[in-house]
Length: 213
Image (cartoon, rainbow, N blue to C red; front, top):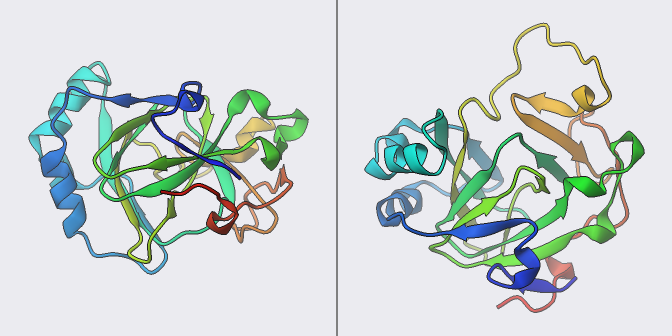
């Protein structure tokens, strides 16, 4: 799999780089967080949300609707699954990493997905990257033994537990694994049994990627 730069035109259908905000203080805080041997995700972190840039970004980028700021960090080397949200996700890179993404429009009947359509992009430290609501994405892949880390902006409540008693009424409802989190998985990805295993093809790993720099 070829790895594009996040600045390459091939990324345009998936998202864009955000400018105009000072994320330096947020990046410093993210670098202070203890690294995980696996993957650690926190939807909303009060310490990060106390930074001035959180309010600025919520008011500007999210148009004054409630947003959350958390983080994801750890060690991951494979695609494993793909998720999407109703609303953009913005990652603030506090390390270099690779993201593997696809288009929601390529989901087939039964929410099946051919992993040959996945594309990989190298994200250097220090960027704010928007992933559109129609972009399939999941955990980043680390490119060094030090792991990866990024801040995560999302609409408020995303990736928090579903209300008790939630019952799926449609096929898409069956993908809902948390609030505003629709998730499919690869059969070889080690996901929980309740996650639909509708991805087929290669479960790409960082070792399959060419052109990482």
